[in-house]
Length: 443
Image (tube, rainbow, N blue to C red; front, side, top):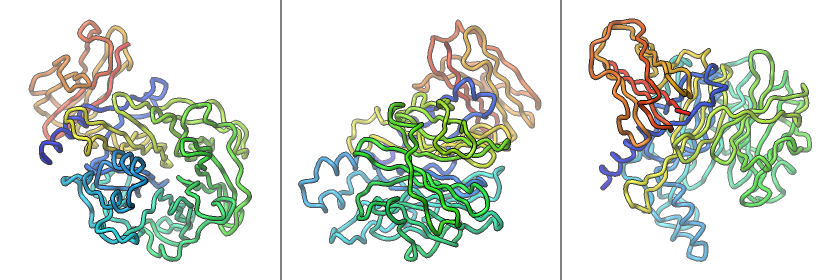
């Protein structure tokens, strides 16, 4: 059953693709699933500003289904839920997580902890997760958010995270921090006077010098959140009274996971997700006013996935985000949902498309299209090529090249709209050991 389920997830993920909004297709290359994506639940994603450190809240199970089970069995003994291993996927890596130690006296513990990955440059890829130094047996931390030093690229001035529903910080540490026992719980009114599980998803940005802004989510009720911000003028030693971001509210839908980004023109943007369906950004309209944001622009939508969210942005403008899937193939209530880290590379960054290689570059335009679409790919060397258009079920809708030898250089194909019914499709190119794909939408 495990191998069969793993195969099903591979099939589901191979045909699932978010859709970059037409207005941003000239700004970004094609989104792709991170190579280190696992069969466990990778949530709470955060990428560092330099793009070389990646973090995730991780559990080797269907965390959403487990959460639904937990909340529907609150009247049962706690260990009935915390020790319930039926949602653990036997084919998901645990990265050495402690699934036993807990403070509740349970025989086992459905653990959730923080993973860390590193790459040496933005032209490399994140290949492997490791259990972070912040991980603690029998405890649940989340939303890791480092603020790197302005003068030392390997040092972190402030490392924020959540624990017990509060925001904590480790000072003067590293990208994979030790010393969690020295973490400081941020004071009221950032956190409530007592642990009330009311704050989440912190994000910090340096304005200038010792001036830092911290934005985060505050729960107004279990289903609704508002965005808050607070300032520190002394490198995070003290914080001003938090204020709500009233320019971005739940009137837009369910808002989540705010982060800030300053582009190369010194323009600030607020990125966040709406209704688990789209990632948007709002432009700051008054410089220095952190409650002045224009109407949000949609950058990317979930496409044929079930959810999208958790954006963070590198200094190059690349967007790290999560994409959710649903298993509708196997009727197994223990293994229904999964979440993976994805990447939307800005065109100023070296990585291009799913191939993560210069050996195969793919572009499709116009996208979406009405009458005819151009499919352009570039090979670095002569290769046997297969090019096809598949629908969201993975079925071939149009075979463009069937295992033909193509010379190095640029090849351009054309596809008439009469070949396809309206809908979302994926253009897939395979050349040698490399694979690239890009979503196309027919009007």
